[in-house]
Length: 187
Image 1 (cartoon, helix red, strand yellow):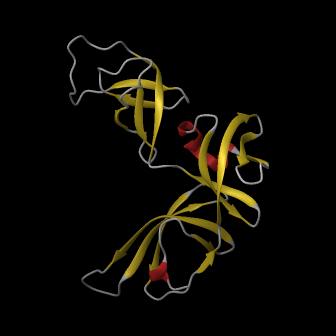
Image 2: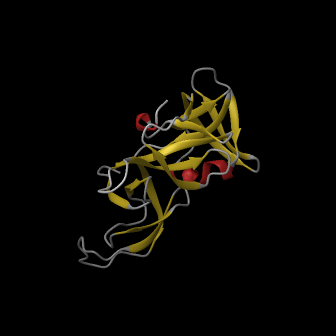
């Protein structure tokens, strides 16, 4: 496939390693040929790299199956997921998942990326709803200002929230940045 066909979410086979395309940007500098700037995540090590592809450069696409998985629990060997179609359970090492587990509660459905029968990564939704389990008490009369305080969510994720957020409230958190996006009403 040609480099200009690369899109986010695709998997590429580069130098024998499997890479997931996280983000792409087509660049046309004032001088010189156009190119594609891509942010890639190694599915083996979890490292992120920036790579520049010349326009028209040939790249090898790896075919990933997307399967719905349910996160069950974590133990010493990793995180255990169940395939919602076959009910097979698979364990994914925590170093492969990185900080993704900070956004997942047990019994949460997510999309698993499967390569040659092995789950190599998971896709998180754009945001998740998590309950605040620990934070300092709110300041009386505090309104939405640009001041934020530390808070811990039910999954152990640490984030910063506005001062009016209390323990037990459910908030929306971006899985991309880990930042507070808003309070979930009725939570």
